[in-house]
Image 1 (cartoon, rainbow, N blue to C red):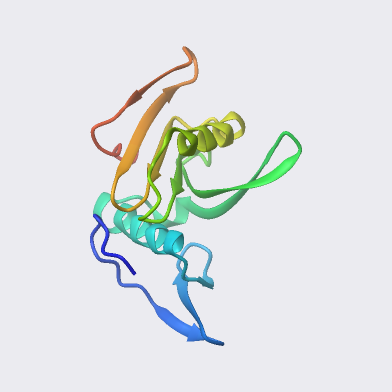
Image 2 (cartoon, rainbow, N blue to C red):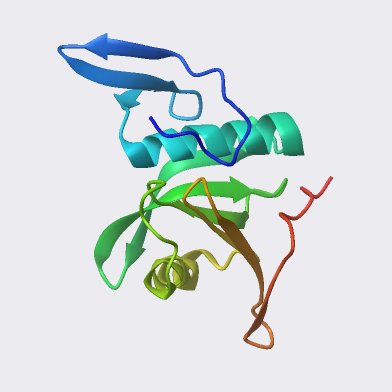
Length: 148
């Protein structure tokens, strides 16, 4: 897999029936090691190990229903009250972060109403803060500090 602009992660990778799998610490099971999963596992490791985000307040592949259709958010970080605080959308390192990626995460946020949206392909990461009261947003220079 490709080197990312994220710290190396101590991933547990195994081969099962000729398929490479990685142990996802949030889902607590082996999942297929796709290029997007490679980015997800490195990014989650970065959030937990380097930014202090609590692993117990994070979920991967979180289901949301949007216009009657089931969708899945790549990662949702919850605040200490259990409300969505950040949604993270991943793409493989070879997939550019485009406007359509942000439109995808904005649709998820119609349901979850998280104040922070982050998109990463492991090479580039963008985070914006949403003010739901005014309907405005601003891009941040860095990821926000998790609220204590």
